[in-house]
Length: 284
Image (cartoon, rainbow, N blue to C red; front, top):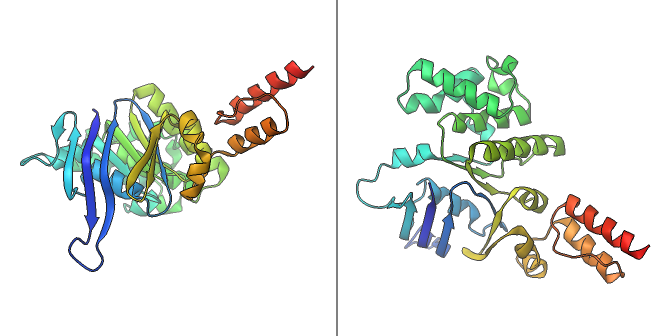
């Protein structure tokens, strides 16, 4: 289920004193089964961009295609789009509202018109996918830890069985262990099911580790759209946008400047460790 954006523009409060051009001639394609990272400074347009993907926002101009069909054409079933493209907002635990976790996760499938039995089956499946233990299913979502709430909220979206999962800062406010668990679970789900994942994050390390491709937003425009290795070679340009590269990128540049023969396009700690070991062996 590919998503294609053609010449998308979005203007907040158009025609008023508060008018803001949030997206400017955006052209993108998200292919089936990709894991795409979206980065950008505050106000760059990344959150506005992802809210277009499931029809929460409608472009001021341009076309958005889902599986080859323009979602802006007359009569397009937007409810169907939203069930196929699941959006998990930043701090999704604020979306939890039912008396217990199971009921909350059943809410989406129930709105899809499924029977109580089907809803429970979907909910059980989704809760297992996110790794939330069964002992919490009948608990109030407000009694869970931050990481557990996050899992429950993501399960609520997964229970609708979307083809595309869009996550806006899903690990914001979590400790490193909770962050790694959540992203590790999402990465495992992506690999096991072929689910298309679009991840918005401020963590360059997370984006470098999990994303196949990175989209860099800057003042409403797409500045880069490439693999992590290629995007982070532009670390100086990223800094001018208020962004950065993963810490290992800077470390490798420093090591090379000090005479160690390493490549500088690595993006993960594992790659950096291999490069350093090889360089040290060559010096012996």
